[in-house]
Image 1 (cartoon, rainbow, N blue to C red):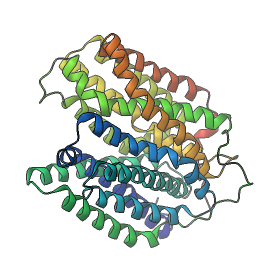
Image 2 (image 1 turned 30 degrees about the vertical axis):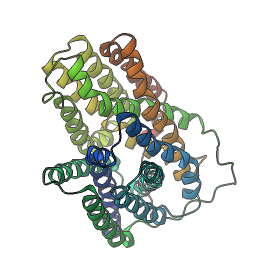
Image 3 (image 1 turned 90 degrees about the vertical axis):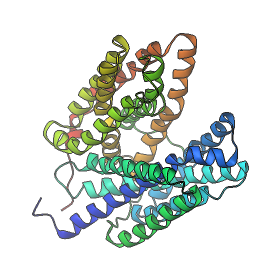
Image 4 (image 1 turned 135 degrees about the vertical axis):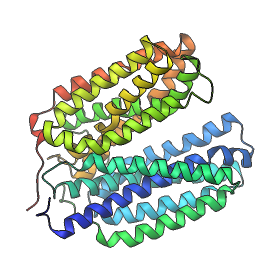
Length: 389
């Protein structure tokens, strides 16, 4: 897009850097969970309770974040969210008691929600400056940053660097980067909205997008939580090989996000979502019907492609809502989406306990049908991209 003003390209780069900050920071924390568990002498039950504080904090502030984004510039909230997020990241390594760890994780979840929703709202604003889709690339950068944060975490663990030093160093660097990039963000004032209650039902289009988001985020988190266990228990691989399924999923998810913008620009949101749902169904069922190493890896790779572009495109479409501001629209679908992210993966364990993991994954594959069905009901106008002149 050589005819784009320089400021548009600068805003796009600045927004992309904030996606990098989010992804790098989150996997930096995730890479040190075992170390923190050991340092605090937590058993699995205590760790589970502590980790649950993060999504509780995230969900608790979801309506408030949407309200803030309807009143203030997403760029201002982004900076505040990034600073809060990195502050909590730095503090996590200094918790010496269980209650401190629990409290910091709650605010880490709250700040992550504030940061992520404002970042996606900013990305939707930048998207309006372009006649082609750029949304999935932003999420691809998040995934690439996640790989980087995980790799650095591995090196820090291998070199026996304490979590406190590691997390604090990363948080300081990411905060400095955020302040340096903030002036180059797109500073958009939200469109004034009539006063509405904090909790309000979205319109029909947003409800469809919410169900799609729910199904996609549930499938994505199932792969985070259960892919390695499935390889171990259902495919009967060694512990060392069990991670290959997750690597296949993450690799295809990341690369597909970088390719997704070209695909959606050519074929449209509706068609891409329908085929994505089909890939999710096919990927899960391939690993269920043929529980062998090669077929399971291929199936998980297909699920990675299927889930890669759905959430960023849902956010993009929610940001074009005519009944809510872009921030409120994104918050609405995110709230439902994160319910899938949190509620569905534990159900896999209950079904597996009653029968086995293969039955669990077979049932989960039906979420792909939800995506195909709901996306088929979307208006074809979702293929349009509004460009600000």
